Length: 202
Image (cartoon, rainbow, N blue to C red; front, side):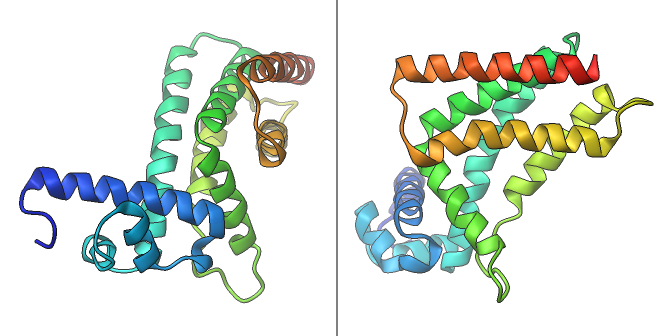
């Protein structure tokens, strides 16, 4: 195994490659960086990323799967801990969790931007990942079980969730928040989400 004389060294190299790939994909987009450049940033041989991930598309998908998995775990914990909460409380907690995640993972914010560009590309989207959409759909399914009623359809819940995601994500796309600003922003979003969902769904 190149540059990996033990499982421990192989694991460390793989982690370093994923970290470097996340940074470079966030900086330049999937089309703007090569596997060799990722290997150089990771401090391994230029060919080692190909050894672990075969090609750049596989590496890009792995980076997004890792990021999506971390967020999925965080949101799942919120849902499990909120089984007795009202819809407005659940949405407010999910928004809070999502903003904490975005603040802690600035590279992911940029990755989502690049992925959105690829998804809307005219000539297919060879790099586009469906992971963000699948995660959204999973949360939507869970919320729909609580919020769909005679007065409100799944489409209503979809629109509400999409609005919440957008109002949480957009500010991180244009600036970084210091801890004090983040807390202020989270408080504002919690209040807004609670007002919207309580008025319409409770």
